[in-house]
Amino acid sequence: MQGIVIHKGDNCDFLPVFEPVAKRAAEVKQTLFFDKPVHIVAANAVVGNKEAKGPLKRYFRRVKEDIKLGEKNFERAEILMFDEAVRASVREAKESVGDVQLLISGDLLNQMTTSSYVARNLDLPHLGVYSACSTYTEAISIAATMLNAGHFQTVACATASHFATAERQFRYPLEYGCQRPPYAQWTVTAAGCCVLSTLGSGPLVRSATLGKVVDFGQNDLSNMGAAMAPAAMDTMCALFKETETGPEDYDMILTGDLGKLGSDILRDLMREQGYDLGQRYSDCGSLIYSMDQNCYQGGSGAGCSASVINEFIIPRIKEGEYKKVAYLATGALMSTQSCYQGETIPGVSHGIVIEGERK
Amino acid sequence: MSAVADPIEKRNERYGKYVDSVTPKSGTLKSLWHSFWIGGITCCIAQGIGDIYALIFPNFSEDMIVNITSMTIITLAILFTGLGFYDIIARKGGAGCFLPITGFANAISSASMEFKSEGLILGTSVKMFSVVGPVVVNGIVWSTVAGILNLLILGRL
Image 1 (cartoon, chains in turn orange, brown):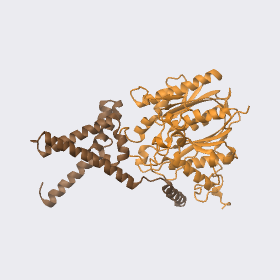
Image 2 (spheres, rainbow over the protein chains, first blue to last red; image 1 turned 60 degrees about the vertical axis):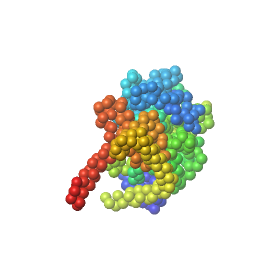
Image 3 (cartoon, rainbow over the protein chains, first blue to last red; image 1 turned 180 degrees about the vertical axis):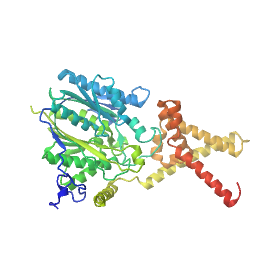
Image 4 (cartoon, each protein chain N blue to C red; image 1 turned 45 degrees about the vertical axis):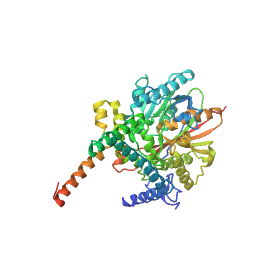
């Protein structure tokens, strides 16, 4: 099998079951290494009350008891949460490294209205990015690349999702009495923003692995974990190979919002690839809710991994508990139309490696 | 091209089978039981309301009693939806909450509440039937078909 050309350069080459399919013209590198120090100087998240009742409740500092925030609709509430997260991080960064020069953000709503409406109140250039729930790592990858190239000194990356607005856009009205299958996930109400800078101090973004869009033919809108797990596998293999590391080199490997089912699938897929993820692997979606909160397989949405990373992982890296963390947010790139038209659900996953600063 | 497409399909098929084997299924017997008792209780309550109406208004016709009972049940369902606990019952009840007339009332009222933020005309009025549209359309189409068949085969209206 080793002599076959089509296997070269693909992440899936030693996989007996899921062989690579297309022939590559040239070897594609997916990983960008940042030789300049790109620090995470500020990280904040605002979460809703359901998230604040989960296992991570004592780590969330900004909690909204009323997820409507007293506004007339949920979209306004999402904008306010997003705005609060961005302003908190921008303020924090201003004290240590100076003004933020660019905002890269995205969210789940049509035409990314939340991000744009937040950016309209900030006197900043704004880039809107979308890759569903992996928007956060996509934003961080772009920001780190720009910082590494020296175009900016300080860039903010943000993302948000809201249960009620996502529910309306992707599923049914809120009060509609429908049953969810046991493999469904619950959209997290949260907004997260971090500020990256080449100045100052804080955890370092070492590399970014840009994901390929991977589709293994899943078409169940409720079973996002199964649709996204192959994308996570693909990016994770690329990350391990191109950074020449293995799971044992990381203190923590996190995926975005695969949920309990999706992360079990990912473990199986990675085992077939020859990597045993073991205890150090976890998933933000399964971390954020406890079993008794009726959230089925766990959280999903762009705010899910952003809030867990910002409020739980980054402080742990600062304290030195974790030294090296691989964080792969995962996104399902479908719309409700595409699914009703019989299309399958493609997934994407962008990964970053965060390291603690050596003292 | 087919040589390229085949391995993808094969891979997807293998993955699909694997996903099916690990995905938890909703317990059929348990769901049946829950929808049976919740749906049954809904119907019992409606019957009880109808009997009470029959006692209060002894000179009403049976049709009239049926009509005002349905109206009462619909009002209750809409009230429950507005107060925000119909969906909690329905999460357990499933088809037991979805099939009776209360399910229809819940679907219309939840949609009109949801889209109120876009205004009364472009929001509520346009989107009110977004969930129950198929029920209305199929109801009209298939009852028309049944009526025509009835006329053609049995020869009476």
